[in-house]
Image (tube, rainbow, N blue to C red):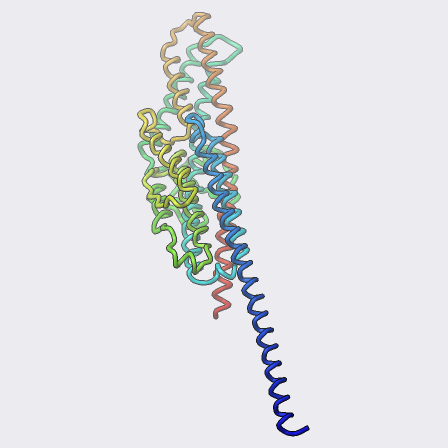
Length: 398
């Protein structure tokens, strides 16, 4: 074969080979783009589902009737909604660890973790509030037992015992209102198995108690803690949303829900230095902003009602305890001995009404405390995993 023909054949084969290489490269690029597009679509679908589920949860909560709002069953539903949102958020982070460990997501997760630390202390303060309500119920129980005494007629000794318990109850509830910023701490935390000691011992003053986050001193303030959770909580900007693949929106959503739930608990339950001052910066383009802000406005309005304005908690059952206490106090004060049979029957009917309230609130408090404990441990779990993601990313960069 002449040299010229061989050269032409070689060039032709080279061109054909180069074309095949380009085709293979193009196919590889297309495959990578397709996979990237599919991954992006999957993340988008996951985030859209999360936003929709959060919206559905709070639309349901916001449909509560006036006599349901801030009741133990309603707050139980609120905590259930939070647990569902928290679990879905946790799964989203787990499925996108490569994004979570990169800036700016690592910073956003670190900020979220700081908010959860503060939420843990709120949960412990709420547990103290639950114990306080139980003490009030115990005093009301004494009144009920003293007056009902089914085996004999109502006498002076029974009335004296009932009056003393009512006075103690009035003082206890008044102290909670007037000295909310100086309530003694109990050495308890959901992070410990501290069941030893009687309920009387649990009410003895101590310097402070330790939560999973830090020592909470006498100057600890629930109002300031809520404000701290909401500090610098701003909607993500466009560049941040793009850089995080949309995950920054999920972090903002979960942070806002965390703030609202903790704010509601502080509003409802007696705890140290309660306050409703919190800034909610939620743009209207978030579908869940409407039901959340509607609930915020309703709870704020509830706190302004004359009969609730000076209450130590907006929980509807606290209002029932206050009302039952007043009713029993008025009844005991109006009793003149010896009791006429008709009047004694009236007294016992009132006592049965109070007894019904007692049993209902006791049962509701037990369920509520278990739910708060679950929230506490879910927050701990989420925080631990978040720290783990960031820690692994840091070690990888090193």
